[in-house]
Length: 225
Ligand code: CA
Image (cartoon, rainbow, N blue to C red; front, top):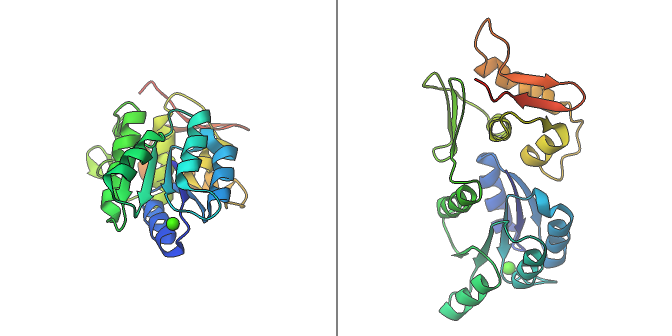
């Protein structure tokens, strides 16, 4: 899951970005309106959700939201706002945002609102399965044959991408965009390392790996278990 966060207050931006990364999201952060708008334009189809501060230097959250909605009707947008009169809230939602949070807010509250919107946009699904492997987004847990398996943030996010796209090829570029963020500059061979971590933790002994390697393309979890 990839999120764009546009927030000019560095402390708040860091607090949100770090929290989301711990939950397995890839987060691109912009600290002013113009940079936020540019990132939104460049990568619009790739963001699963956008968090917009309302008051931003350069271009307001409202203006960014309007511009986004002209191009993309479906990506969920949440406003982060210190404005709290009813009129402002109505106005914010009229620009096409899906929800808003008043600062200061608890991180858990933000996460809960995000989960609701992401669930709606992905057809209500929050549990993904392959054979005896189960990933539950709501409680952020992976089990194999009913037993909990400890995964790191990146392993969890990678497994989520693979299971969400069960039966389809997950291209290396798509994996990088979903699991790592825009500042990722390493060799994409880091994916292979993490795929091996997942195989070690989740494969069944004596059987082929649940993750197929597609040479030159990426990886796939089959649909036929
Ligand atoms: Ca602000």
